[in-house]
Image (cartoon, rainbow, N blue to C red; front, side, top):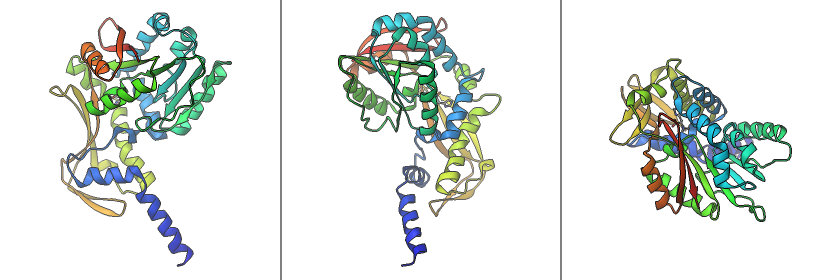
Length: 319
Ligand code: AVI
C-alpha cells in the first residue's frame, strides 16, 4: 500500500481507539443516551468550569472555600501535619492552598484529567510554596491510580473537594470510595459534598444568567468537533438543567432543537427534535446519607464541617 493508505489506516485505528469517540457513538446509538461528564474537561472546558466557580449563582465553590478557610486549623488538627497529600481532580489547585499553611503536608500529588492545565497549576504552587514537593499526575482518577510509593512514615491523605463525588452514579461513587479507602488506609479522605436544598437555589446554580454553564455543557460538542471530527452545529442544541427531586440530583442535557443528522466517527446518527443527550448528574447529599455511604465503603466517618446555611459539607473520613 501507499504511504497515504498506511497513514489513513493509522489515523482510523487511532480514531476508533479514542474512548471519547466510542462513548459518544454509544450514547447516540442507544438509550439512555448518556455520556460521562469527564469529557467536559479539556482545556477549554476546564477554563469554563473555573468561570462557573466564580458565578454569583454557583454557591458550592464559594461556600466550600469559606468552610475550608474558617476551619483550616481544626481540619489540620484532625488530620495531623506531615501527611502525603493526594488530590483527585485538582484543576487549578485553588482549594488546597487554603489548607497548606495549617496542614503542612510533606508532599502534594495533584491528579487531573486536564494535563496542560495541571502542569501550570502545579508549577505555580511550587513557586508559591518553596519546600513543598509537588508531583502532578495527569490522568483519569476514576481509573486505576498508580501512586508513587508513600513517603516513609507519612500517612496518605486524600482530598476530594467540590462535590465531584456527586458527578458519579451511586454505584460509581461507592466504587470510588472503596478504592480510595484502600489507597488511603491508615490515613483518610477529606471530602466535599453538596447538600440537598431548595430546588430554586439549585436551579439557579445550573442555569446562570450569563450562560456560562450552557457554554460549558455545549463545549462537549465543541470538543468532539475539535478532537474527533464530528459535525455538531452548536446552534442546533440547547442547554437543559433541572432538579430531579426523586433522585436528588441536578441533571444536565443537550437537547436537539430540530430533527437533524450528525456524523460521529464517519457514521450518521439521526436526532429527533427534543431528543436529549444526558451529559451530567450532580447528586446532592444529606450529611447522614453521605456518612452512611462512606461507612459502606470502608471509612470511619469523623467530624463534618458545614456553613451556617447548610448549603455544603466537608467530611473527614478515617481510612
Ligand atoms: C465538578 N462538579 C462538582 C460540578 C457540579 O456542580 O456538579 C460541575 C458543574 N456542572 C455544571 N456546573 C458545574
